[in-house]
Length: 378
Image (cartoon, rainbow, N blue to C red; front, side, top):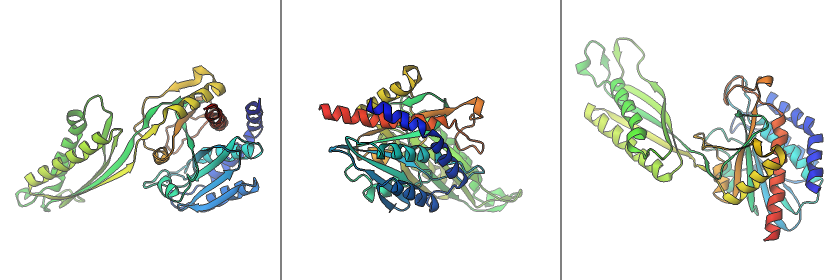
């Protein structure tokens, strides 16, 4: 009955969620450049009477709701925006968690709730790691997070135990040849052609060097070389990303890339510089906490609305939190053609069915109470 009352209170405050989300949407701030957004969040939480820390790990904000002597449960929401025309970022996550904080601050809770408002999720090295290093998880026993997801229709919730999002690495490769006149190629070392050969061979790593049953992606996203039609360029620059779940597969791909690049360049007489940057690790959900999310989602949207997701090759620095405390990360469907919420994430016309924010808050809250209930029984 108590949780039902809080659910009703969340529903009553839905319009405030919408107002907050649209405010953040109209005042976006890019990763590591967030200034006004964390100030706004901190003011909102202080107005609720919470203990608040600002500048956590950089631009992060952490609030704490005092409860009983039960386990401390953390919720995380990110608030950075994207450098695209629409600049639509993680406004829905932040708005949803702020209103959830308002409801929980009015209640007598079995344990503390920690509200982690994180900066810079979109841009590695991200905000999660420095916030953890700055003790945002101090005393936290469990953590839950959620991402709005337009590929899923509104009213559906995507969950998965174990690996749900991939480790996201990137690489930058410069091939150094010997430039010259396009009519005299034998006096040059054609960096562009070396780059073409390297790119072709790198694409064979996943198909021929990785276990077919092991998910992996190697994508070359940029290839730049030359500026004139009759000049053989002395350099070629490639960059791309590698996505994996298994650390052994990640290591195998890194080693194979280095070997292929080294031998191909040596064969052509070219030099190279490879900068391989390991990004966020894989997001691996814990079993018990994912069960809590599943039960909570069924309570909120019904069993037909709960979808067992296949792993996604996109990355998320929520992975760092799960390396420190048990928890679960899930997806809230926000697609709806009737509201023009049909465009993919990172698209300039990306939009959501805002009602998904209410579902997110309700499921997070229900998962917390289920966690408290189970740990009390133990």
